[in-house]
Length: 201
Image (cartoon, rainbow, N blue to C red; front, side, top):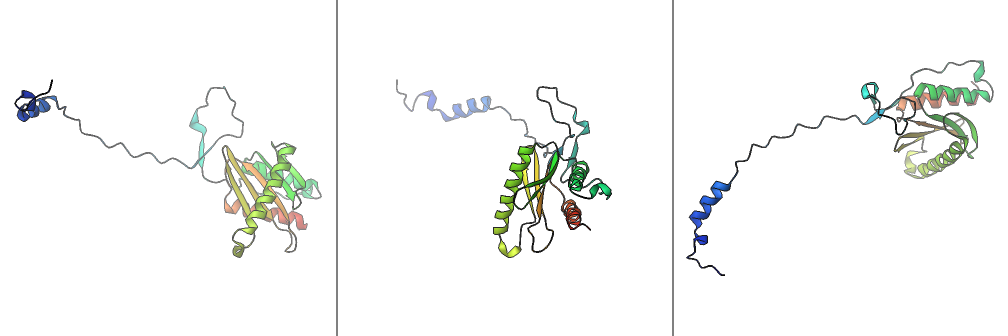
């Protein structure tokens, strides 16, 4: 049934009175506290996480941004010959708490490997790093060759470093898989030690 302007539902003063009674006084809105700054990366112990196991307490979790070498390389007689490459990679894995490290030459042949990475993973990853360096060399050619490649993965980092031996030589690539990217200083030290080994200094 249509209503006319004379009906009480058109009485604006009554409508205002009803609206005033129904209005709920809103509590003052508190601004939420600003979020606490979260670190960029979380470093877990080297042991692998076990799926299905109860979560460990986080008191021992270290917050870091980049990995640096925790120990210097001690040159010894075991560094001589082809076995020295493996000893150097053992140092890299230990000093960075890395999952694994490997060396490939410019043709993709694996020179040595250390750590938890399987042989097939090392071969494939080494080949892909070579391609990444080739592509890096083509980008911004006016800035020179690519010296390192860092890839952030869902659960870790892959760092590749080009280690020159001589100016006319392609050198080789050291690949490191670990929980964090490396500092510039760590990359520089590792490259210097591997160059020293390659030159037999």
